[in-house]
Amino acid sequence: TLEQSNQTTYIATGETHTCAIADKKLYCWGDNSMGQLGIGNNDNQNVPKEVTLPGGVTAVSAGNNYTCASTSTQLYCWGKNDKGQLGDGTTTNRAAPTLVGSISSVQAIQASGAGQHTCAVAQSSVYCWGSNGFGQLGTGNLTDSLTPKKVGTLF
Image (cartoon, rainbow, N blue to C red):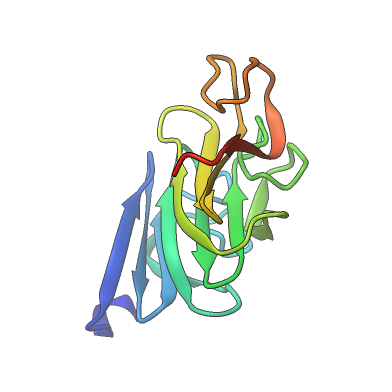
């Protein structure tokens, strides 16, 4: 369990839930009304519950009723998805980790706390998806995106 770990490497807080990486495993707790804990149901949890992901977890970001995490090779998101913030090509809420296609080797990820969009750094490029009413995806328009869109090579 999380309390037995001596290697908590990262913690992320969403609006009403929290997730932490310990020994390359992901644990989440708190409000789960939209499936944001990633445990396969919508039951709230007042103690850390392990989220099942293939491989060791390297990063996590908790947003407004959704969460994203990466392993050494893949990116997964789950929870609220009304604006496509999970990046799976739908607006269907997910109670379990769902693969975000076309992105691998993720170096950083950020789920929006107040909004409903997500961005990641992968392969020296920035990718964003979800709500875009203010141009926050960097795509040059105000159209929401259900899948990751490359912002450009910034570095």
